[in-house]
Image (tube, rainbow, N blue to C red):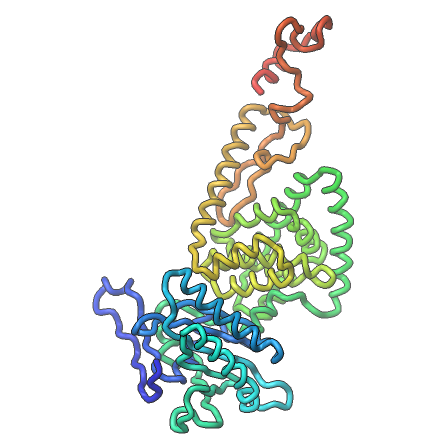
Length: 466
């Protein structure tokens, strides 16, 4: 890792079919190879970022990683100490103390600034981070600055491998790491700035139109929720979301990027998106929507959550926490951890106290398996379907009212899976208005001394089955 003059060879191809499932190992020996590997290690090209990579064992295997936006110079000492402690503590929680750290500082030049000037401006930050890591007995074995397609090493001053003017980064797809990433199916999703732009409120002449639509949706839905129509509002939200998912699913997404997002935005009206944004502020509706995490419509679901996040224009930016969290969950569940981290990070920026985003962000960063949560959602959906079927068989009459219990809500459809027919509603068995059985000397069906009203046998039998 620290031998700047050595070169890395391509990964050895498998010798037999049995080795196809074996992990692919790539040895990175020079600063150039470390710099070229960064986007494949993260899944995107970081902008304005500090990146710390933990190394473990004699072979210096990559382990835990941490990324943070570059703060203002006044905060460099405190941020450096916190980053070093967070990375080391996180590795210890996983059972292994890091044996070294690779540091990356990534920032493009400002207007009128050169990339070499960026490198010199960030040198004190690199030194402060090296001191903070060394204070925890974890050395920084390499510190690199990446700016405007070039890189510099803060640890090597040999002109032969690290010239003062910097070294150009290799062309995309031409490095050893690029070959290994293609072999195992890893792809780079552009820059961090591009990924964040797909989840940020759009700008343009329609900004005011979207704000008015959000105002209208709020004034229409909020009184209904206050009046106790939560169940109906939630179901309307999920029904609308399902229709929009179908609409997006029927239109191919095309290549990732601004053009694809603009095409998705054109398929959705301001009134539809405003209704969904406000409706998803309800926790139960959001949890039902979280069940749409697998199946052939998964990508259409992810495109819808992205589009809703782009519609959360000021002063509704805090409302983006719900669609951003759903986007992060679907991305993580689909194996796109890089996009999941970006979406969940932006959800916490919109609302730092959003608990669902906090839990998912922590789980994703800890490298947990999303299958555990997927299985919980599947069981909850199945239990709700069984309950609905039992209620429908028990009381086939048309519904006489609405309740707000989870057991009586229709199941939200999951992408590509069969949905359960809507169950007919009835009052719960412990309803206070239901006549109670007589005890002692009290006449059945009413107060003492008052004869019980005669009922038709069919209706009486139905009520007794409740």
